[in-house]
Amino acid sequence: MENQLINNQERKRYEYHVDGHIAFIDYLIARGNIYLTHTEVPRSLGGRGIGKKLVLDVLTEIKEKTEYKLVPLCPFVAAYIKKNPEWKEILSETVNIG
Figure (cartoon, rainbow, N blue to C red):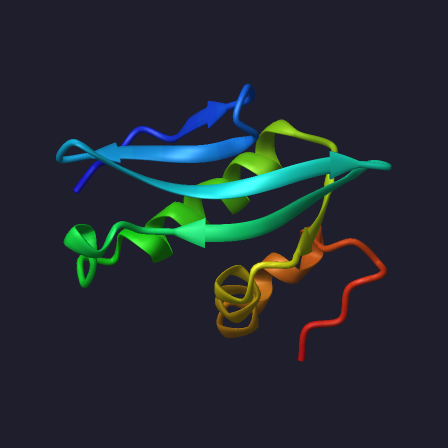
């Protein structure tokens, strides 16, 4: 399953287009931080690991292509980082995830 990550700056979200559906993570950018606010995967795409892959690709994009520090307001993103602590290095110093 190879999905192309799209940064839809107009809608302020990262997207995957899969089988006619859109999975996405909403974001806000302020004061040098990127806030990931909401992750949504259509029910018809559930159970395929798309949400986890989307989070991984978005975190990679932030790490490799931006200067932003991450503030994961979305519980799904925060849980992913808690399970994969190597991503804590891109967190804002104001964030503490278990």
